[in-house]
Length: 146
Image (tube, rainbow, N blue to C red; front, side, top):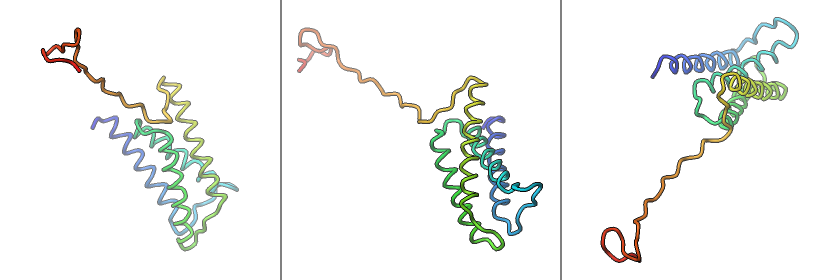
């Protein structure tokens, strides 16, 4: 693994760990300003999607989108089971907006460095079949071609 891949992968795993810890700790996060909780949700999922793309550049964006939404829903369910925390539809909505903001950042980053992001998997290269050449009904190996 190259140094660059190691840094990208480590950054993603650190971001994921921080997001899960902050979402599931029993005491709510400190509010720097009114509505800061929603800002934290938005920022956390934006960073998570962006770092996931940097760590796994060959993963289709559609997969990142789906898996991040599944993770966001799982975190909201786990929050409802955590003492002192509640799940809310507003939080899930902000999570989705954060994921979309992260995907937008990926597109802007891709445009800046000249590497467009892919929504689908790259098409697989098909192997060409080699056919025996025939000349007037006789194959190259000497037998009759059918």
